[in-house]
Length: 162
Length: 403
Image (cartoon, helix red, strand yellow):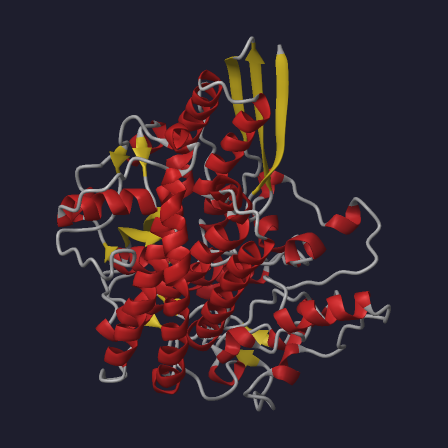
């Protein structure tokens, strides 16, 4: 359970520890990502396991749970900020703030966005290639490139090389 | 030679192991092994300052907000910005509830087996009542944290310059006051019960022969009601230029250190130098934090809703000391062009470790000298370690301790 166990998470930023996701060492039947895993998903998981039912992940991106959905951002999006500097009442991407909501798996009820943070993808990618596809739709100024790369690698599911 | 391996010792996250070697009822060797080294500081270096408060909240699942507030203030010092008073008060409220929750975990859940043994509580009903009280307090604290900090563990709302969002304190006030009052009333009997701990037959074993060096972030403008919650940036600490020195022994932080300080300030005489007092002190701190929060919430309604300032600079260094539930939490950081260049996080348990090691030895020696059975001596050792609640998963350094 947790992003570190599922795909490296923030611990994967510390290279010298040489950490690996659990599934690369043992066979894993079920994974629950999130940093920390959302309460609602954890309780649903426990309930389904104890009642012998099947636990299913919602196949949708985080935008489907975002309070500012639907997003009216027009692609390509020019990124101006890496995190919200003030309280927003509309989609962060519309405002040019980096948000990984479109490529991140749903399940956390967009709690970070609700409380004023941006989404940095702790739930994991909706599909392995989605981050690269998403990047093709962004215009990132040269001076922000290094920091954006740093943030895209924050949870370490896919290593993005600028 | 008798070799005893004590494992696992309950920690909030993970397990610890103590190896004790005894020869003819004399302690030969004691080894305290606390695995995990997460190198969180390395992870933070190179990150933009705005995401640091979000990331440090992931260091610990019990005290995430202490880390977040400490990091926010240290970065504010580095970037030359002060959070508005409203933001500071919301931060204090969040820390107060974190104290309540963390102490409830320790006293009513993790340490319950120990207090039941020491008090000779054979009535299952009473132990169950204590357990239920703990769960109720934790549930209450989690509910409040969900309303004011975005969740019981994360994401938190403290950031560089203040808050990301102003929680709706007005909605919370009425409900909070009633529940806080009920929780407070429920605490008195547990407090009275905990006072009997020092009358336990093992009391002498848990007595500290010397009061260790006092470490607390409490400043001169000390407020006894808010004693667990004071955020102080460092005048008191200026003498302690070498933080490394803190980790080499003889230093003690946490509720007992705070109580010694209260004692010095308020000239109240009572036996502070007994570890068994930690249960009572934690219950007292829960009660203090609840009363303090009720008052704080009342004030929050009257303030204008300005909750964030923009940083003036983009480079500099800053330091912050926050009283976390287990003791003083220290953050020291260096920022260059809005990116963290260096960061040092000293957690309370890390400061206490050499002391825990020293005290563990003494407790086994004393128990054996008193003629207690080996098993009893080991139980006392486990109790002592659990009393400190060494959740070392948050520790970011390795402290090498010579036995």
